[in-house]
Image (cartoon, rainbow, N blue to C red):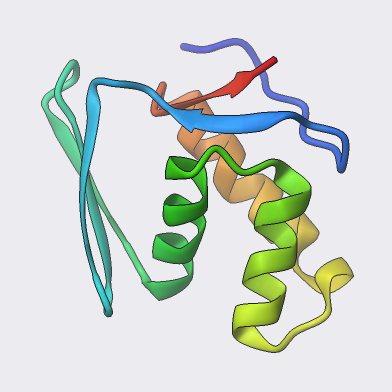
Length: 98
């Protein structure tokens, strides 16, 4: 298991590990972890977040993008985005690029 992740508005870029491949469509995404042989399906919002991770966005940028895309206030989704990113990190799918 990866060490715990601490996400703040100052967190640098989040990146997907090379062993994680994805397929994205308008309804969501599927992530395949080639090391573990497991896959995960994401809904539309999860897919938005994944796309931002693939671009190396920071926690702040991801939160802003999702809030703007979903027409919700940023402070209303920070905790949810943080939890989702922590789950991806705990499963070894993403890392913080310091």
